[in-house]
Image 1 (cartoon, one colour):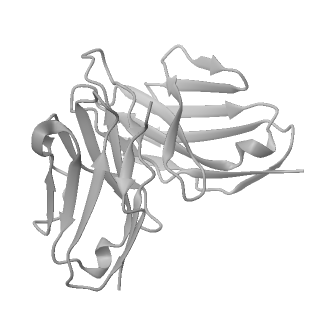
Image 2 (tube, rainbow over the protein chains, first blue to last red):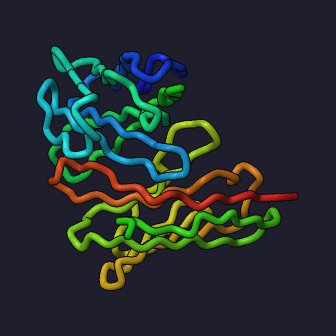
Length: 116
Length: 111
């Protein structure tokens, strides 16, 4: 079974440009999460989808970040316009929705974003 | 104050050694606890969940002390392949299960 995939693996852009990250969760997983690790800091939660609905977006840094999950399958995270402090590794994770406590979250390989 | 505190290390240990990592968490509403392993430039992978009664998986033993809000991981008979960063992770079950991570403890197992 395929795991969580993310595209691109790396992205280098200039300040002010736009970047769109994509995440394909494990098939059948209703829950999809975005996390980010900024250099030297811990991995931090950004937001959570259940199917196509945003369940919790309390971790989104500001309105330059827009996440979508149309159709409840893959998700995109757009940063527009990018700033230097947006550099980091963006992880996507997915889990089932068994309704029995905390389902294991499986992480994708991440997208390493560098803003120059 | 960070929600999950860990000693960043690195812990440099010889092969075969026993090593212990600790972490503390500040949110008393936390109900689920995990240790994740992250290899260099890779994604975090679940190593084991941590239960109140303590649990063991091969050479790995995890303990939870809810009263002290303290989690530990013990690795016995360390292997070179255990070298990685170990992330202490907590979640508030029902709160969307979003994970809160510590910064991780780096382990280097040497010959």
